[in-house]
Length: 379
Ligand code: COA
Image (cartoon, rainbow, N blue to C red; front, side, top):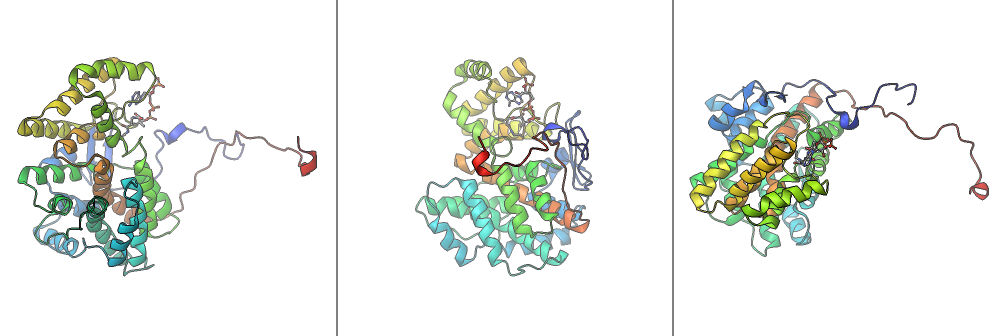
């Protein structure tokens, strides 16, 4: 260990408190998640995604007029610049949807009218633009790669409503809109998770909001983070029926494979978001008359809990929920991003407001004090 750092390294920074934040709080022992003082259970049932966006950015619930004003600002912004439409047409049709989102968001920064302005006001405007445009980016990419024309978002629809509308070209029913809205509320923020931390590390160098968000998208894509929801549906599709779940899980454990959608760094008990997503998945199964994916998920939860004591996380039941809504499977992680952009931008604003460079140390385990040899003496 290097004598200067001389601090026992903790793999994966587990349990390390890296700073202060007033945005969200987790008590992993009792499965409690709080956004700015409000329990996720209350927000999931009573709030809309737009209200939660206001809450995360302002750390207070909006009054009606504050909410109306935010909605009006969001409604001005979901369209994409012509240059971005052009870029989307150039992206290979088989590109990974998270890679496409990362590339498009990076390019979008070049078109932002606030440019390199780093004032709080300009950064709030950038947060509004990013949050409003994320769903349009995802649905436009999806349509264009399937040979369809983009659909312009409608002013009278919520972010959730516009997601389905711009994806399918027709308005969603109330159940689908409410399901997406609640999923957006549940995924909006989660303390200093990997993608949020990545965003904060980039913001802490005083780099711009787009660069910070691009860092976050890259981190969210990974299968140990947001990419897990896509992994879950792949597994369910591969298994195919409830009677094959037990054997599949036991096989996966025998091969020391990780099962996507289970386990969590912070929760030692049920992830409170999973409680709502399980319920939503069950209700959608009942409504559609196709309960296979929900039934398989319930069986998988039972076996994984029995064998390893692992609980489902947010990604597990979001997979069967989105699948029951007929959403394309490789948009599952981008949908997560359409929600988490609200939390990322809240954290970036918080970081800028009280900034210090984030620069940890490493516990050096490499060689030391070697004598330098010229090239012709190296063996
Ligand atoms: N399937 C099988 N085993 C799992 C597991 C899973 N999903 N999650 C954790 N474990 C096991 C590990 O193999 C390890 O066992 P060991 O001590 O016998 O080696 C133990 O539980 C601890 O896991 P570890 O990976 O060290 O925990 P972590 O805190 O570093 O990781 C996750 C947390 C979320 C990355 C991990 O649970 C995981 O990979 N889950 C699957 C991916 C996922 O759903 N990610 C979304 C998170 S919201």
